[in-house]
Amino acid sequence: MMLFLLNYCFYQSKLVVYSSRMTDAHCHLNFKAFEEDVESVIKNAFEAGVTKIINVGTKLDSSQKAIELAQKYEGLYATVGIHPHHIDKIPLCHSELVSESKDSIALLQNDNFWEEFENLAKHPKVVAIGECGMDFYKYETNGITDPKLQEELFIKQIEIANKLKLPLQIHNRQAGKEIIDILARHKSHLLNLPGVFHCFAGDMDFLKKVLDLGFYVGFDGNITYKGIAKGETTSLKDLVKATPLDRILTETDSPYLTPAPFRGARNMPEYVIIVGKAIAGIKGVSFEEIREKTIENATKIFNF
Image (cartoon, rainbow, N blue to C red; front, side, top):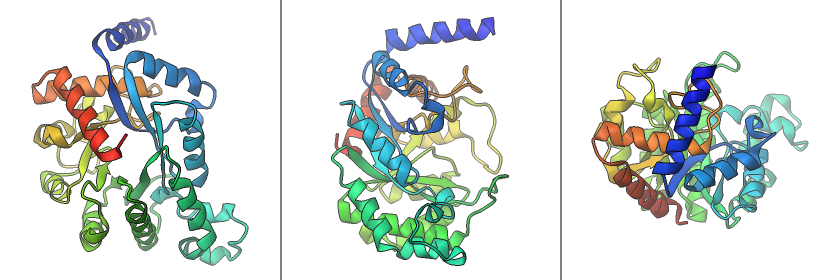
């Protein structure tokens, strides 16, 4: 515990001394992990030099909460989206969806639901649609949500993003081929700067396809971890090396994916500075160059 505290104090001082103007392009301050101290977490991030934070929605209520928080802070922004995990849960919260066997289908066809979604997404502090995408990882809690329903939900959000001229924040876990196929089929619905693949993972071929479609790539605290994640074949460090600097975004995915040396503790937006410094080390360039370029990239995509 003492060593952890010493490390924490050391890194805290380094964050303040060496940083100014960083962007956390993906976090979840609207989640329960920040319920008790979200105000101080945001304050600490700004004081450390993080000047832009994107707080990401994963269903309607968390999207609404992200917007409410964004209204309080100049440098805090929101997204509106339905995460693939939630397609089989959200309808149960809406009284108009009464047929238990058809809940998910009803969600996709429900005009009231999507009208509410679009109204949230039109808020001036909303900078993207997402977190949306597909997830074929088998979780212990809920397994894999029906892939066909995931696809329909993803396509619906691609269409809304096009309608509102907002970029996408894409979630992919072991569903890269399917996501690329969907995006290729709906290429006419993508913006010139279509968005970002959040928390990027995959192989070199997948990276090339993502870049060829015009997407940017988000890297998080897990680039500081050793080895290769379960189900993957290419190390994150190799992916960082292979990604052009003008296509990289810095993220935390707070409260998840806490970078070393704090792995196991709650992640926070201020740790995006550690992510930036890790990218600099992997690519063999200065932190200043990473800082400036990733700010420029985020500004281009999210128009803030």
